[in-house]
Image (cartoon, rainbow, N blue to C red; front, side):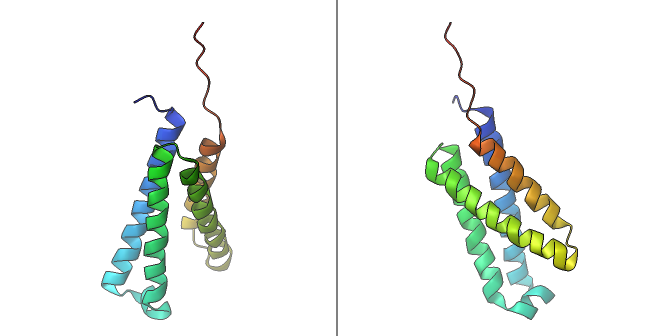
Length: 119
């Protein structure tokens, strides 16, 4: 198991972020909180599917597949875009965490691992 540390760290961040948001979406559906009652179950169900796709991208990143990196950057990027809209509209400070995770993961995924010289 000779994975670059940046791959391990990026995978852990993506997986934890996705699992946390899956938990939030599932608990919102289960408890039928105010937000779900205001917009309906459709949005929470979409969030559940969306973050499940994000979790699948973590598997692709762990396997060092290009599709996993692309899906991770796209899903986290879209989430950051909507988080910034929520930050400016409602003052939702969780958006700063979402954007920070996106920036860190994108940098980790786009960096090339250091070559280890045999000499």
